[in-house]
Image (cartoon, rainbow, N blue to C red; front, top):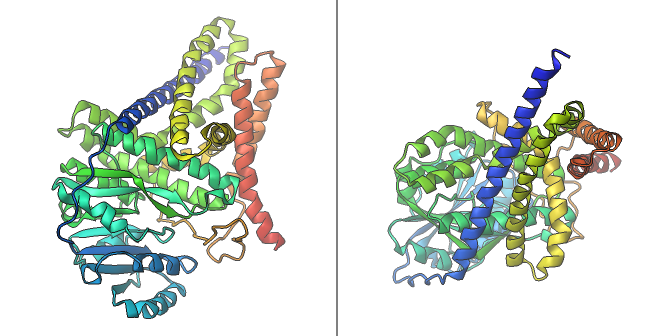
Length: 493
């Protein structure tokens, strides 16, 4: 008994702190939603028409993309832009037959008289950031458009983005990600559901508030002078795009976001690929926060901009807060049972339901923007999206902690599949090395842990956290299922 009370207060304090962080995060999302709704009601003045076409460099960072690189080159070759004003840099770090495929495609495109340069590096120093900086040194364009290998930009991309640079303060024009294979499976639908919210409410909301936003690594155009002024691409974080975005905006450059222009890309179709992408995004964001948050807070930016920037850079920390709150919620049932006098803490915790409703409003507004039948789509996808997001809290939370504590890992790119139609198959993809990891085993144990939480709540006749524990059990179970199925399919094949 003597040791119970100190441990109890540690559990209670950490649990309340995690819930408080989640609550503040949800209020931030609600504020962005209100900004977005307000911005949508305002009429955006169309940009001035281009009177003089500038020279543009299109950079295509490539690393072992034999399944999708031809599709990308075909799309860029169809740009409705004068060939004498267009430079195409293929920044190729490949170590497989991708380079040969590129060379053959260049020969096929030669009748179009395009200025295509294959820049192949033998050593992948600095990963994607290193490739971009290497190409930047010889880029001829006044503006630089960047596309990852899994995207298919429309022919009029440059005509619809370049006019916004008439404002000399604009350093970047970012477009919205659309999806080539959203309807391939439930997994791709859930990814699209989450990304749509980011590319509508978060980007537009921050932009409307005059706060910092980020270049999303692809489907955008940089003013070359902006990259130089901000110090160039740096490989010291896994999100070189977020890092350079903040450094540029700290230098006074403005970013313009175009929600109305969608650039379609391919979503990962198996959970290991989703995890690879989520790991890079969440760890990289944490690394960028570690690197730049102090500079943001010490800058001359407005108080509101600093608040938005802090919430933005700490966005991925929501998975740490969720993981801590989830893990401690089971012993909290025992604390409540042993200490009935603390029941008021649980009742006071009902205020955090406001946070849940804030997140619900956030995704509801995004759903009304992108879906023909928003009501049906929302209730079909939103609960499942929440459940799977909870199940990813261990994976993403560990990635964030690695970023905060400075543990360095290489840039692991997300494998591409060229899977668009439901009839397409990913099996046989040479870039997919599916194995049963220890993390998946821990996720399975957490599924059992929260099943025990459900049982404990029933045993103690306490239903206060029952729904939370059911969702967590389903979330970790779903992530385990989607993680194991590719391993099972590969071994069965």
